[in-house]
Length: 397
Image (cartoon, rainbow, N blue to C red):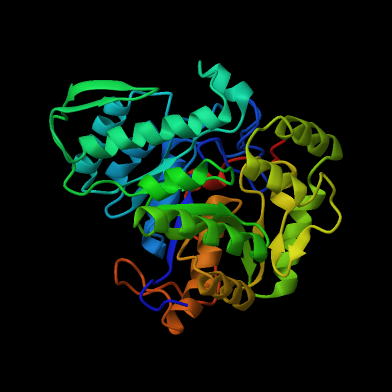
């Protein structure tokens, strides 16, 4: 474990809706499949963002896809209701001009006081890419992303920049204002093309929550790629979380979520996810193969979310002490950033912050980014706004 790399935690903004059950959004699923009993209104998303900021999360990931609201627009609006909270905005190269993307990011940095993080999503679902007028194959998308990021990063530091490549040609491009702090770049990807792109451009490589040996192998591979370019990369992991005062209570909550899922829904979602070209999605599916049996794939790592949700499909499940120990184990192998979520996103943000963060703080592994006192480790009533409590709590299918 590297004591010079303190733990950082980000939360998640469900721009497709929220619920007390697993909402079926995510990579590989068509438009219209997502949606929850709590609509993704700006008031509700703002409530999550403000609560997460207060609780000690440094920021939140906002997804991209046909099943959710546009990440850049939503986060630009939410920046005005937070103060220091950062926004990890998912962005797809190839769907937008690199010059325009660089300009948008520079504007976001300027008006948010440098609170933008950019998550590069190459895309692994051909049917969804084609819906966005992109008919390139997976290898081409990674090659295009490399050119895209070359241009974007150059425009953040140079004027009158020109570039001629296979996918892009830019002539004498200059931004009206360059960012004082270039937005850190994140990426997740298990395909072969992810390594070179990460080595050339990326600051933080994100993996989904696979069994520990697979995570160790990914970290080693990315480090090898980065060594060839003389760059260093930080590592993060994207997980859901169910943490409670006791292990029994946490697993009871996981069981509640599982029993609410209709087998026909699992079958339909798995059929849709099977179309994905994404290596990461294939690895998520292989953890459970659409079966509800043996979902605890290693101690305190549960694959139940992936039955009806694309993308990150695993959750940390256990007592606060067990989750803290699991996080310490990930940190020991090189993971410094944790991008977490849970259902509902408002309540689960409190469970984790009140139960797990004080344990990590006591051991000197985490400190509140605002320097404020962390929430009490004893979990009491969670404050909700009247708007949130009025929402119906039916399961989202």
